[in-house]
Length: 231
Image 1 (cartoon, rainbow, N blue to C red):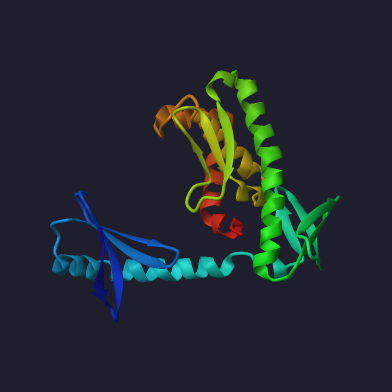
Image 2 (cartoon, rainbow, N blue to C red):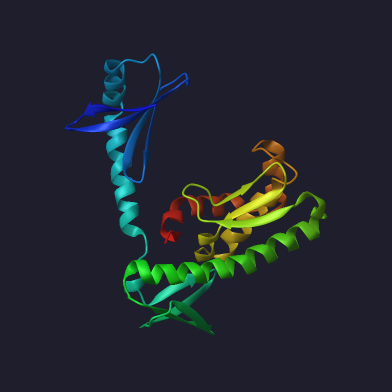
């Protein structure tokens, strides 16, 4: 159940449930309180007051990250793993792309951000379908894990770069193709390790270390720069 709490000249959504504690989340620049049924509005306001500095920092940080998201309609290059492709934009009735060595030709009805990113999304999905599938299959073949993998899927998700289900289906966020190749290799190591270890316990991280020894640096890079990879 959702409601709204008056706060600082505006309102903050409150989502109540059977949870036991109060939590404050900020996503896409919008704060939200999650609270148990029994917590009063007075207690929620006290909770917010105690965390006002944290909330202000979180809102500023997310605003800065939104400003750092790329607008490829205004840029001359776009990343693909360790490559830097030169963008050539032109108008046309049919949206399409064509790569010629280190040049990427994009055609769209309008050369604004939504149309250019729509064509780029198709380009990155195509690259992800090839490279992520190849890297994943190569990894499971090398380790002899073929019987554990059931499917590979691509999706654009808001919070996760990858996911592995208990049934062996691995899902990747195709926007990872804008990251350096070592970051992609870390993601593949992370998700394929879940085929044997469906948790984040010590045995899982030991497996990741064996597959990708410098995973800590690459995980930190993804945390610090992941917002730059969103179309």
